Length: 366
Image 1 (cartoon, rainbow, N blue to C red):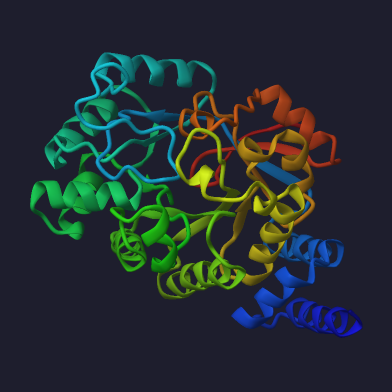
Image 2 (tube, rainbow, N blue to C red):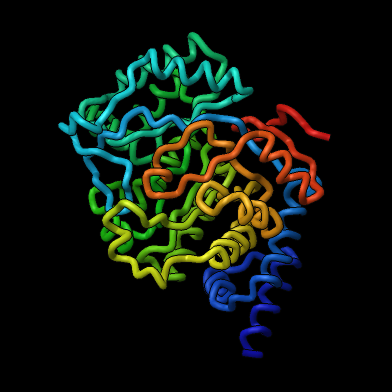
């Protein structure tokens, strides 16, 4: 045990000295289980990259425009198969517009719009929808995960750069990191065999960055991956960030096991705990030394753990989630308001700051 502690201490000292830790060292930190020491260093690394006195959050809406999907991932309880007339849906424009108006009335600045891989929707559908939204509303469109972009490209018989260029010109402002899960094909072949492969997900993000579009990176873990594969995911994100500098934030969350096929395959005793969540987030802050923002995942962990995560490397509490359908479909239904966020942040002695999607200040609570 002493050897593990010594190794952990040496790794943390290197990180504090400004040296980049490698994958072996990141795995060693995860295996050490030394949450307090690792969290302390992660918090120091966070303070060096962002204002230590402020915690940011965003008011936006997670609008899932369709649940019809052909990839039927084992971890997803949200999707419905094409032809499901009872529960499958594709939101019409008037409903989307109404939801945007509600968001703006609540002080929202962004629309996070993602959906299933609908077999009938090509690039022209999205161009028309995005232009219609932008003509009517001053809102940031943070939409279409890399697997959706790839699906649209295939459906439209176009290249990914062509699709991204057309969508950008139609009003797409930035791309969320959804569909990343764990960027290791062994894992993806088990949990989502029909979905975008690791190199393809990274390729969409690379093309988006080259077009000047900002994106986020995510990781959904705690199912069939090993600790080494969890770190391999982070390595691929860090390497692309070294190349493009296009990721503005990293968000990780634990697999939710209710209502999906994968939940039946993952033993309950191996499911990640709040301890595992905080440790993984802290290690991500230390390892991902080139990504400015780390976001707490209160929507999967609950507000109390989400608040604690702000002392373990996170500088952002994410969205109040005016609407959320995917995680809640898997059995997790935490909800919060702007007042809840302000109270939670002030409870840490920090200054709450509402931001927009690109981390520009919208409102500061003194």
